[in-house]
Every structure is written in C-alpha cells, then in structure tokens.
Image (cartoon, rainbow, N blue to C red; front, side, top):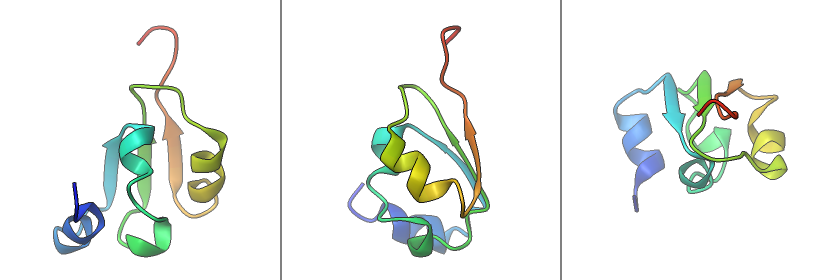
Length: 67
C-alpha cells in the first residue's frame, strides 16, 4: 500500500481494477504511465477521481446497483 504506484510500474501493469479508495492512493496517471485501462468498482466513484483519470486512460466504471 505504501508503494502502490512503484509496484505498478515495476510490474508493468497496463490495466488494473481498483476501488476508488485504492485509486486515490496513486497521485495520478503520470505516476503510473504504463497503465492504459483502469476499471473502478466496489464503491461509488468520486468526481475528482473520474476527472483525474478519464482523459488519460480508458476508464471503466464497474460500480452499479447490481453489484
């Protein structure tokens, strides 16, 4: 958790599925340039997370009433 972005870069992660809370541990897309697709779910996404990531990666919100 303390080095989430560093681990993502070291493992060359190109897509990830995180909760919005876990996503907020990363300062932004520039910190993990290898990530091309981000799925967020498990809880409602805040607008600041969507604003930060939507124009930089393929952002998919998987949270909804069926979850």
